[in-house]
Amino acid sequence: MIFESHAHYDDEDFDADREELLSSLAACGIGTVVNIGASLAGSAATVRLTEQYPFIYGAVGVHPSEVEELSEEGMEQLRAWCSHEKIIAVGETGLDYHYPDPAVSVQKEWFARQLALAEEVKLPVIIHSREAAKDTLDIMQAHRAGEIGGVVHCFSYAKEMAREYLNMDFYFGIGGVITFKNAKKLKEAVQYIPLEKILLETDSPYLAPDPHRGERNTSLNLPYVAEAIAELKGISYEEVVETTERNARRLFGI
Image 1 (tube, rainbow, N blue to C red):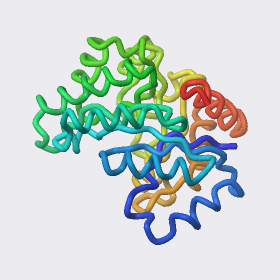
Image 2: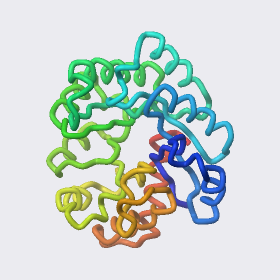
Image 3: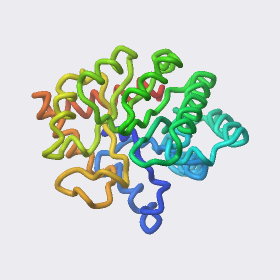
Image 4: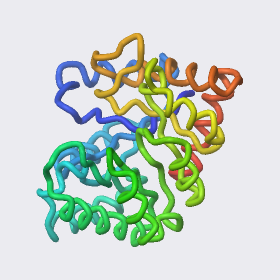
């Protein structure tokens, strides 16, 4: 069964058909889903989803674009959620320089705090890094992220950066972008990264693969991702599905 390692089913894009969609996944070969908190409200909703659906696990954290909402009270709430039996990671957290706000200094502060939380509660961390390759890596190295463990979600950098993350024994979340014709750098990186370090993800409702690019994404599109990886690696679709599921269960301790 396919293991979906990164989705946002708490998102309002799923308000109209969330229950129907989630209930259909198993029959379509999607066995396990990790729902990712991107804000305090999203993390709270993630906890509720894990309680409602046996096959959903969760991560709690605050996305770099939302860190201005964080405070000491917010960190205490994240810490409390981490004790929930089905919360299996901290995140997503990291740096995102695509937009001017929040300020870089604010993003860095709360990224470091969430890395420290992951280390404290002994959970892997889910890293978001957009147009911030060097700063992300510097902070991870400074906070010994290799000892924490985790996954670089929606990996989008070249294989030289992949080498740095491999040196920290991190996993790589690969999603719909791998199917895009212009994703040359990512395709080269995926050829370089060992299959034993790859996780399948969608980032639903975002980043739908070809041939559904621009539409709402769901875990039902994961076969397109697995097929693209299989073609790049010269292996079978089944090997990609089985290995990435095993990888995810190893990382998250499920």
